[in-house]
Image (cartoon, rainbow, N blue to C red; front, side, top):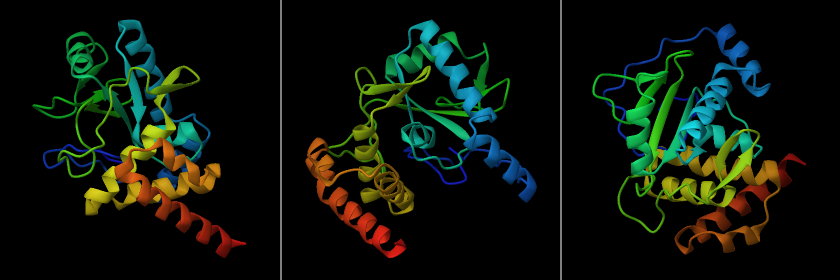
Length: 221
């Protein structure tokens, strides 16, 4: 997946084509539209949510767009989606060729919205965040793990935090995920006792990041 600040992913991006570089003015325009939710990424996400609901495919929006939905917005250029393996199969059979195409030859989980050219990155339940190796935290079945934000189903906050902590702890190139958790804590004034809702394997890291967020907040006052 490609973002100005990437969101959680386990798949390799070795074979993905590079995006055309944007000018500074174009970045400013896109950023303004994004934070007003008028940009093509938000439009693509809402369009995708409608199509998935019409097809009865259970899903959860994850990654950068989930951060925004929960109250911490940072600019992202794609939509990250959690499906079951069966949901992925249904997506491939029912929606590919009907508004969505593979993002590059041979792509199985990366697609483009043909109307906007926004990339849709799919992760399936059972995959592991960060380094992709087995660990106590895995991407869950989206059934029952979402909250509704408007017309879109977004992964629940506790699950989002859990996945980002597990990712940042196991993959040196995913430190942005730990920063995302710290930013969520600061933006939403999340309590320390939220750790009790997280998997035991990431509780100590949540506490460390929470304390760092308090220290950063004190320094700004």
